[in-house]
Length: 64
Image 1 (cartoon, rainbow, N blue to C red):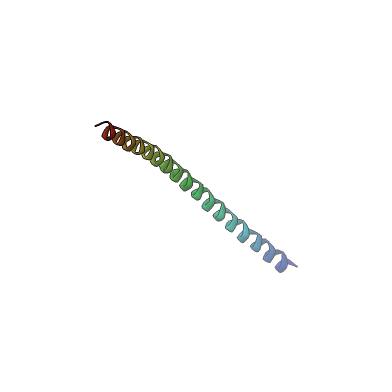
Image 2: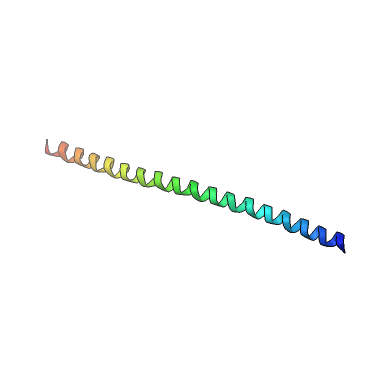
């Protein structure tokens, strides 16, 4: 019975460690996703500025 209890406790400890590693990986991925979202927002802003500049250039060329 002691061996069985020890085996169960060891297995539980191993699973808890694995769960902690998985939670850390999820946390790291969430941080990475946050960084990517910031980069995406910046690119969207830059894209809008470039689009507007292109439209302004087209309008100017039409006037000229």
